[in-house]
Image (cartoon, rainbow, N blue to C red; front, side):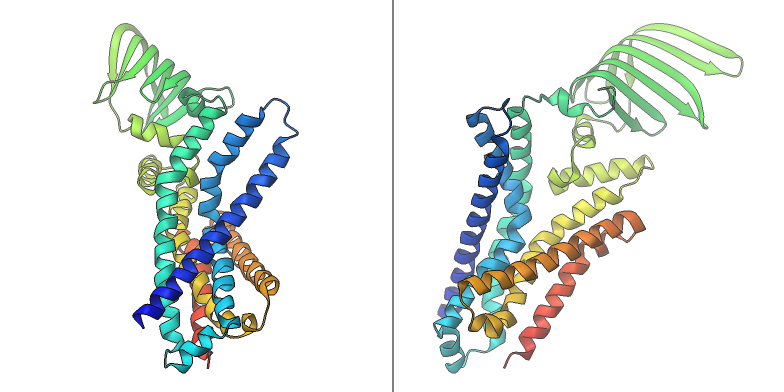
Length: 350
């Protein structure tokens, strides 16, 4: 059984990776075709941007590629009667499913590695290729300025230079729902235990009037360090899990909505699980409809099942954001449903 299990796992892994490469190749062609109309982008730059976008596409397409690849690989074994011979030798359907899931575990770990260690640097490099500096990535307001919050302090940087250097800074301090102070500074540098504001004009408001002071420097202490600032303005789906968790903690500490970010975090956990669920779904399909189907029919079956999963997953994600469904439930329910269907179908195979 050990030899057969390794053979089945290798078949699933190889077929899934081939399917993933085919999907990425098609996506690359479509991106290049779309980019031809952009006269401002050179061919080499357009190709580089498309290649840097491929890790993100690969991560998103992993469950779908696994489904198509497993149907093709196991379907080929079924068409050549190899699965029938295994069962005649005393190998049960559950043993075959276990071997397939062992291969799926390797694919799930690979998907996790791509999402955590390949996608984030590729996205940052793609931004650099598009001519965006670190300061450009920090601009979030409609006026091109950076706006962030730390407790009762609201900071606006008109000219963010980097995650450790801000220029033309205005800090609004609220206490009890009213403006308590306004601090303006020419520059702000992170110095390890806070932000050192230089060229400071501070105005304190009180019931008896206001007090204006000119200071050479003033230290603003808070939780808003460079590691937080760099993720505040990033797209949650492109962040690794550790940085995404930092962002969630920042949002919740400041009383901000973290639902979208928590959903992105749960979806990161759901992607490798979805890869395993898609493999479980292929078992009953291979032993029933896909056994007598040709390669084209197996691909159609995989596309239909994958489309159903994609639509349900997208619908649950939107429901979580709009109707307040818990993020964990939104992300894991489609995976659990398809895994249950796959297990039910596997147990019914005779």
